[in-house]
Amino acid sequence: MISSGPLEDRLAIRELVESYNDAVMRFDGDAWQANWRDDAIWHLPGAGDVTGKENFFPIWQQAMAGFSFVGFFASAGPIVVAGDKAHGTWYQQEELHAKDGGKRFIVGRYEDDYVKVDGRWYFQKRVYDVLKSEETN
Image 1 (cartoon, rainbow, N blue to C red):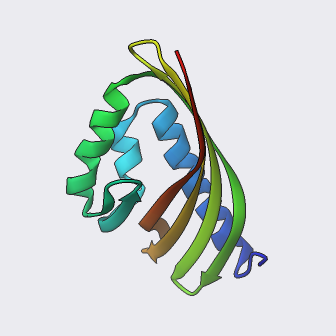
Image 2 (image 1 turned 90 degrees about the vertical axis):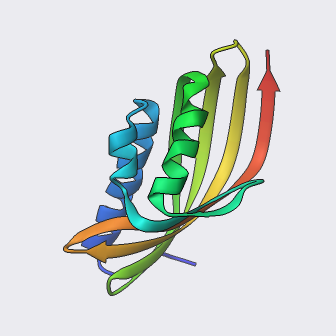
C-alpha cells in the first residue's frame, strides 16, 4: 500500500511522530502526552488496550524511570489520510539502556489511528508490536 491523502496532512502526521520520538528521547512527559487525545488508546504487548491518557501516562512514566538512555527512531510505512482521520504504519528501532546496566535493542511496529482536531493531528490509537528484541548485560 502507498500513502494517500493531502501531502500537508501526511507531513503533519510525520511531525507528530517525530514530536513523540523526540519527547521519548528527552524523557519529556509533558511533550509526550501532548501528542495524544485525552480518550486515546495505547495498546502495549502484554498489557492490551489501555484507554485514556490519564491511565497510560503513568505506565509510560514508570517505564521511562528505569532507563538512563533511550534511542527511539521511526521509519515510515504508509500514511493514509481520509478527511480528519488517518492511519499510519511506523517501524521503530529502540536502544534502551537500563539504569542497572542492561541494554535492550528492539525493532517494533506501530499501527496508528490519528484524528485532526482544530487543525492539529493527534494519536487516537497506537498499537505496538515487538518484531525483534535482544538483550545484553
